[in-house]
Length: 148
Ligand SMILES: [Zn+2]
Image 1: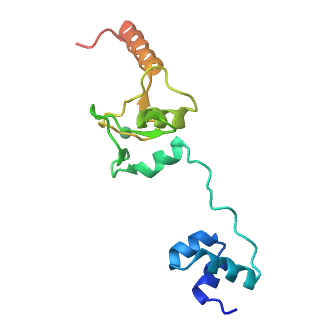
Image 2: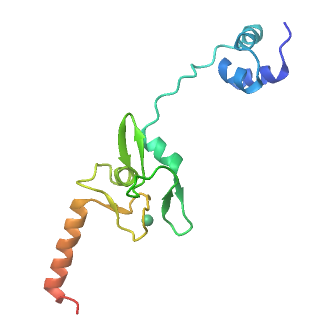
Image 3: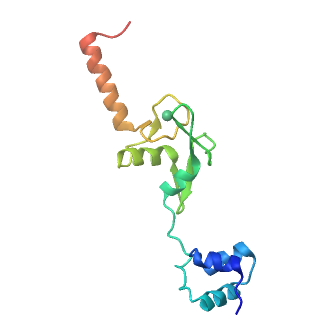
């Protein structure tokens, strides 16, 4: 059997039959026949593992020129950036916080870098962080006095 050069090329590149059929507008059966004619083993199943919320995060976060990150995805009515995954809503702040610290935030994770709606890792504080900062402020005030 004669195999089209473009089909053969994608088969050798390791693409699954269905992907090749879709890309070159040919029948899946024709691709499968070409595969066996060329004696190329079947590509791994086209089924990909479910993306994680973090995977989806990276598709929607875009670095800014000034060292922060902005969200190109969905915002709630209140303007909170976030995404849906597995029937759950995750705020981008929470995901960024978890990626930066390796743990879930206590209470809300909110931007602490001064840029509205920033989603860059390490630019958020949770309740525990905010309370710690207040304690430090109080401690400094106790040592140096309250700034006038
Ligand atoms: Zn930031």
